[in-house]
Amino acid sequence: MDINEVADGWLGIGVVGLIVGCLLGLGIVLIHGYARRKGIPPDPIAEAQVFLAYGRPTQAEAVLQQALERNPDNAAVRAKLTALQARPH
Image 1: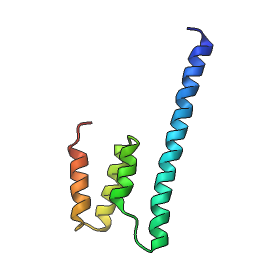
Image 2: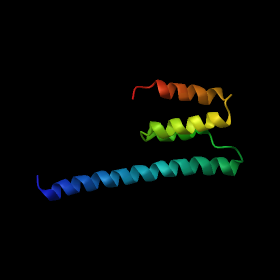
Image 3: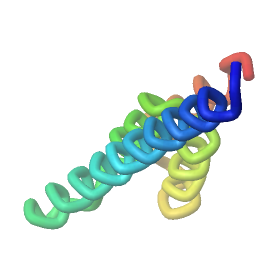
Image 4: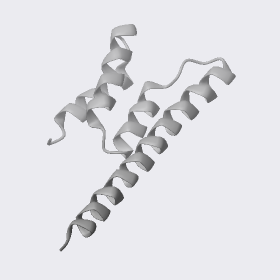
């Protein structure tokens, strides 16, 4: 394997990461945009699901924790957060 093959491999990984990051950002923007147009607050569980779909459990957990800080009585968010924290890392 020469240096060009190594560079091509790293470039491919970088491009894939960029695409995944863009798709993740687009998913979050779509969730918030839809909620705003409908006049409803964004769904933290839906937002967390987008993060989980792209392998970002830390961000999903942060979204759920912030939602619980705003509304500690939200049982659905609490259940999703508990399930997420129970998953093996």
